[in-house]
Image (cartoon, rainbow, N blue to C red; front, side, top):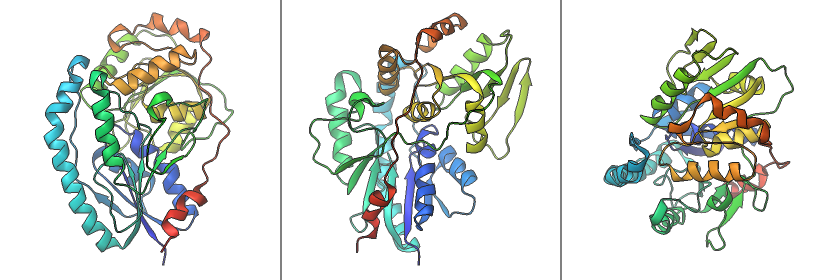
Length: 351
């Protein structure tokens, strides 16, 4: 009988779910049986990608962003009782899931309550160092306390320079077994004809996703060349809307998304870490607009701009004129590194 591995990404935008796709494919290739567990759009995305796999709905964190970036931290603090309640509910759920599905191992992408002392438990994060302004020391300490409840931590980045996560994914001292996966992406670079001048990738919690969508649709309404918008809204059916020169999709599955990014000259998106991994794999020119108040995205955007790889600006400051900066930047490039899944999955082979 195949060993069943529970794989549970956080439902916070689509990034955690999408970077689990290559891990699920690797589990299948090594003859494990992945069981998907999440909630909301993250669960819907993985159900569409892997319709034959069993899936379980987990308790929702229900975290939303403040409308103004300066209130981001205050909103998270206000939501913390709700977050702790969800983590407690996760712990209860995972006990039942292990028994019901005869689970042999757990892979949690940033779900803090999905672990067990009964089976090997992996935590995936690129944030060993959690930025939160003047409370960074505290948020980092709290996050590390949660991570230490797991058997091992997998970081989707290179261990040494050059790397993509910078100080987020690299600490001098961290007393938990940590393995670096390399730049994890579900995509492959393909040399195909460029047909779109710009592709806009939207994602992340509300209301900031909608605020950026509305701003960019307004900015590009008279743009003369071909633009593709992907809203990042998972719905039962895919919808396509044509507004002058702009083609708007509510969502794309992996195959179409890979094809469309490959055939687009440049990408405008949030500076979410999974997006950075994907665009690096596809060697893309990009322009980043970090989610207001989200310290991690602001740090990544600033770092990549300072490295002369990708220009960026604050959401309120974006105009079409900013895109003229693109030619002065190198663009993202991936590293020649393949994750050793045989070694990583050996954790689940132990008796």
